[in-house]
Length: 81
Image (cartoon, rainbow, N blue to C red; front, side, top):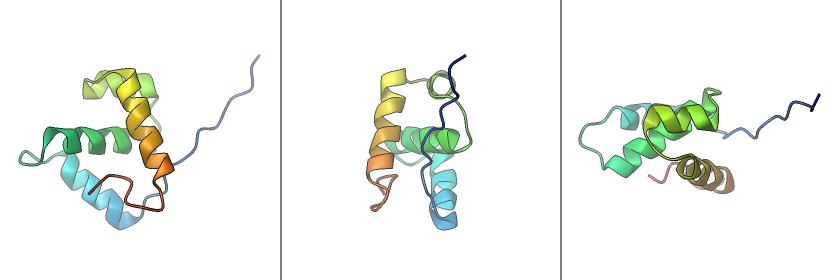
């Protein structure tokens, strides 16, 4: 049986989480920012990338791209705001 892999976590402060939560339900923010926020919140809550893609309505490569960018940019603002 293959060993279970642990995936890297996106380190977000309470302030960043609050901003992402507000952005994820915004009706006036640009679509790409809302989508990015929904992807990052779902990833942080432990959902699989495939499940995130289905629930947000994007492709799996899009989820990979957004998560990888956030992981690489942790020292900067990971959600691009």
